[in-house]
Length: 287
Image 1 (cartoon, one colour):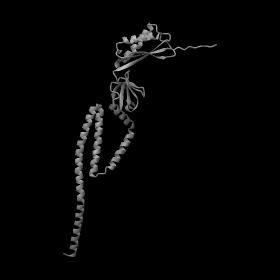
Image 2: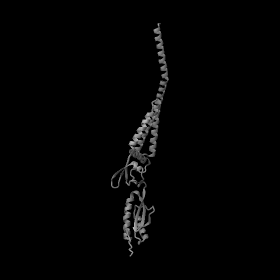
Image 3: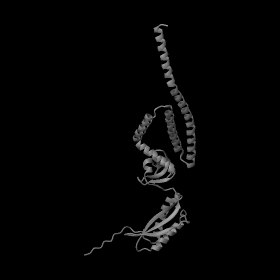
Image 4: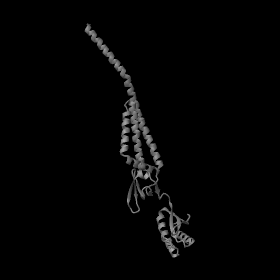
């Protein structure tokens, strides 16, 4: 073997040794990577089963809480997306993919979308609260004390609540404002009290007027006789003595009782000589 052949063989051996060392250095890394891939696959499979189990538990909870079907579906879909995003981030992190930038992008995207849809998100949050807490239901007659709008609830959506007024007009109220104002649910209970006020002259007999009002209340079939019927003086006004008549009735009979008693008491007072005075002003002139 000449010198050239010897040098070439020596160089080949060194290159082979270097290659072997390089391969030996990568073997643990490849092994660790394969192990992490296997663990990631296991996490993915186990995570899917855990997500299905969580969603199943949430469905049972929603049904037990009697949450509206529309809100059940939406919350289940939202929870499913969030859980799968978390699972993907965990799997990617286990494989070795840098998830910090991905999380930062998601955070920025969430803030941007939140600012762009601020009003809609407020209405959506209000709709969720209304459907979960149920301050009113479809068919209830409500009054929005913030705006004075009132009507029968026709539909409750995630963003708007639709009311039908007594003169058959449709009002769509954003759930955001509706959930942040005081709401009077007129039909929450089966019974309501009817409050009526009548004025009589100072010269008239108060006891006689009270007996006439009481008689009219007892004659009305829709008035609940097992509830107290109150006839009381509430004010000594400038031109009249104000007497209040308070009776109870079923909620669906409220306006019928109100209008009948208002008319019948007026007729009874007129027939028995009890005056319902106009506003009067006495002027004294001193010379």
